[in-house]
Length: 80
Length: 197
Length: 181
Image (cartoon, rainbow over all chains, first blue to last red; front, side, top):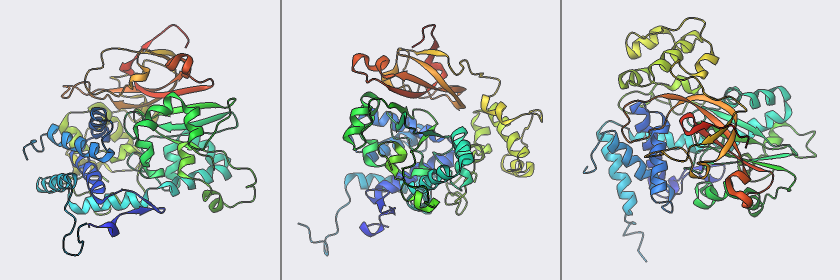
């Protein structure tokens, strides 16, 4: 599941610029679904991550938000 | 430059972090790799502006459907088989000769996934998010969508649960067109409000 | 359609073309054990059963004995208006002012509307109030409003003519104001 050939397309446009973006996107959806949280719970972290570093590439903020959510929910500590 | 045949590109730091996080979450039973694959596939194939275009075309040809769509977007959109995450509360706003609507999310990137797919990079960019609420007429002109001074501009900032979809004006000279032909005229940008069909 | 612990949505669950309305995606088991939204959950579950979307048996199988304590006359309008704990304070047409302080921690109130006056144009479905602090003890549903702000109110002379911005704001961000914006 790596490499340019695997990049997803929709109407001739890429849904994600790189495979890792799709992975971190899917992970966020999965964690929220598993925990039975509303999507807004992740969004709160995303909003904070973007505000924290507005010029950071979008999906890197997404990754930071997911890491914060995971830590916040006690799934894993930041050490792991 | 690296020789791709013998030295595959090293993962970047962010790719390593994503991989590590995925391994950890799988270990903890939070996600499975298959689930992630399905999500990526859905966002790539099932969700996209071709869905919204069908909704718009239907509203253009069927005044009763249009009335239902404007009264309560989510169930009307569901009539065509579309719905899902970030589409649970969709409000459709109609462009008219007197009113031009445009959508933004100043806080992050909220966007009606089931009818438009994932947002384009410019929609998520700090300049778009900051400027559209501040100087919409100038920004729209820059983006190739000049709006005359006499036309009211309504900006919708998706700051809570509602996701907005713009119903563009039906172009002139399309009276005989089929729904499929009409749908082909509707662009993602028109449904965000930064273009006209 | 319900999320299953362990991360594996039912095969094709996320890939199903026909998704249902938001209230059908709730996982009653999680919400019950988490202590959130109990009143809303009861109202929604009743609506689901009455609407034929799920059977009582399915709910019970997922979450154990499932309280459906609302009277049969509950309607969609009642559910959208929110549980008894939070009746909407404002109506369409009300002039309101956004608070300009007290926004500690995570917030959904964009900075550019703080302290500004607007008018309610829509009352939206009840939503869980965003956390004001990282570990708020209580989660409460409250009404959300689409509030229209004229551009000149937000940006003064720089604000364009014939421009306005609508922002979706949680009730506790708003105060009544006597002045029409």
